[in-house]
Image (tube, rainbow, N blue to C red; front, side, top):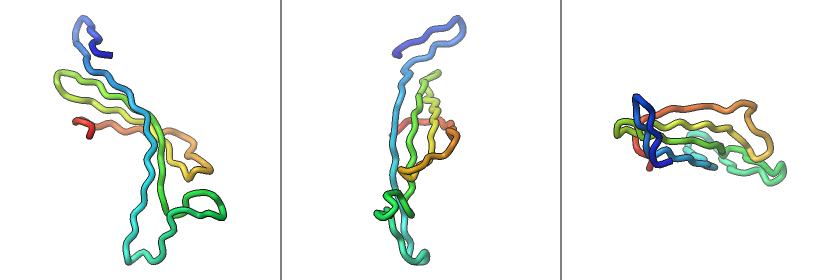
Length: 90
C-alpha cells in the first residue's frame, strides 16, 4: 500500500514480508555440533523459524512488526512470538 490517509495521520510505504530463517553457531567450548539429524529427519543443533511481518512508514520512520514460530522441521512452537523494532530493514 503506497498511501493510507486518515484525518489525523498519513501512513505510507506499508509493506508485507514472509520469511524462513535457518542457522546455527558452533564454538570450541560447546563440544560436538550436529546441525541436522538425518536419522530423525529434523534439526538437532540448528535453529529455524518462519513467519510474516509488515512495515509502516510513519512520519519518515519505519515501524516494523514481525510474528514468528520456531521449528525443527518436524514440530513448531504452539504460538507466534511477536517483535517490534524501529529502523530500516536490511
